[in-house]
Length: 549
Ligand code: GLN
Image 1 (tube, protein in one colour):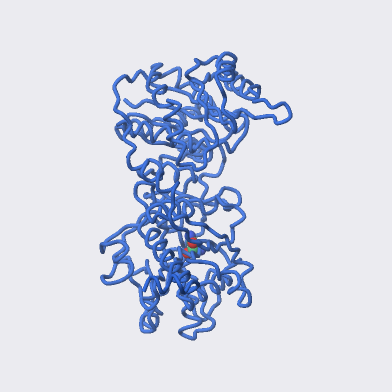
Image 2 (spheres, protein in one colour; image 1 turned 45 degrees about the horizontal axis):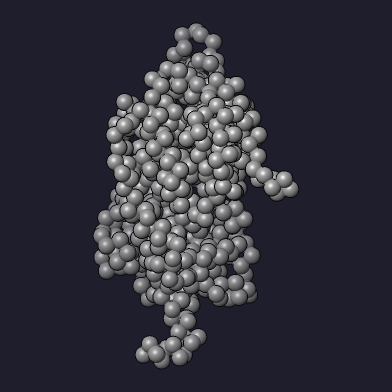
C-alpha cells in the first residue's frame, strides 16, 4: 500500500511548494522508492487550459493530453517520470464529477453537500494513483495558502485521510516563511506560528515544517519554532534561498528532510541516495566554460512563468554543452523591419515561442526572416514553426499575402490552416490536438541527426497546422517537411537544409526535457548557437582566427 505525504503552504504564496515537493520526491526516488507527485488546485476552472498565461503561467501538457499546472513540469523534470491526467486535480474537476453524478441520480435523493460528497470525491482522487500504480510514496501538493476559503475542502479531506489511514502512512508537511526584519535585524517566527495555528484550527497538525528563509535559522530559532508550533526539533527544516531550483534537493538532503520523512513513515530500510547524474548536472551548471545569448521571441515575456518549460530546457541543454545560456527576452509586438537588426544583432540563436492569437505575430515573422537570412540558428516551436512557414511563403515563394487563418480568417493563401477535425469544435476547454502523437522522421535530415532515429513521439497543443496544399512549392524551394505524422499527413517538423541550423516543430519538445534527459533539439540548438558565437568571435578577433588556422 502507498504512503501519502501532503504538502501545504502558509504565510504567503510563491514560497516554492512545487519545488520543495519535487525535491522531496526526488530524494525518496533516489533512495529507491517508487514515487510520484500530484497537485490539487483550488480554482474552479476544470483545468488551466482555458486560462491566459498572464493568469496562470504556462499550461503544461502531459503525455495523455491533460492540460495541467506548470508544477507538473517541475515534477517531470525532477523525477524523470511521466505524469498524467490523474496527477492534477482542480476544484472545478471535483465539482464537475459530483454534479454529473448528481444529474445521473447517483446520490439517491440525498442533499449533495461539500461534506461528505465533495470531500469524498477529493479523497478518492487523492488515493487514485496509490490504488492503481504500485507506488510506494505519493506526494500531494495542495495549491493555495492555508487560510484561503477555496482550499478548505482540500484541507478537510487531508484531515479525514489522516484520521482514516494508519499513522505511519500519512504525513503533512507545511511550508512557511520566516521573514527577516532588517530594522530589527531579526528573523521572525510569528507568521509561522499563526499559520500552523490556522492549519490546526482546521484539524490538521503538520508533522514537519519547512521554513523558507533568507538567513540561516540557527538552533535558537529552530527550537523556538519547534516549541511553539508543537513539532519535534528535527522536524523543523531550513529551506534557504538557493541559486537554482536544482540545488534544492541537495539542500533538503543536507537538512535530512528525506530521513526525517522516512522515520515518520516508519520505513527503516532504504538505500543511500543515488544522485550521481543529478550531481554531474549541477557541477556542469555551476561551472560553465562558454556562454551563448539566445533571443526568446514571445509576447508574454513580462511573465517568465509563461515560458517555464522552455527556460528550464535551456538550462538542461546548456549544462550538456558546458555552456551558460543567457536568455534575452524580445517582445515580438515591438519588432519591426527597421529595428530588427538592432534588436537581434547580439544573439547567437533565436527561438520563436508558442502562442495564440494575432497580437505580436508580425514581429515573429520579421524575426524569422532575420534568422533565415543571417544564418542565425533558428528554432521555432508550434506557433514559431507556423510563423517560419508564413515567412518562407511570403519572402521566398513570393506569396505576399500568405497567412494563418488563425490570424486572418479570410486570407487567400492559408499556408497555415485549421485542422479539419477542429472546424466542428465549439467548446474551448480540452479540445485542441493535445498530448503525445507519433512522428516519422526522414533520414539524412537535421531532425534525423538530432534525434538519431526515425520514429519519435512528442506532445502537442494546437488547432492549426501546415497546409499540405503548399508542401510541394515549399520543398521545391528548399524548405522541407522532415517529420510527419504518417496517419494524418500532418507536418510535424520543417527545416531548411541550406541553413546551418533552422528547424521548426509543430509539437512542444520543451515538455519532455528533464535534468537526466535533456531534449535533443535543445541540446543541438545550443550547440549550433555555440558554434555561431565562436565563428562570430573569431571574425571579431583576427588574431585568434590566425592562431586557429
Ligand atoms: N495558435 C497555434 C495553434 O493553435 C499555435 C499553438 C501553440 O503555439 N501552442 O495552432
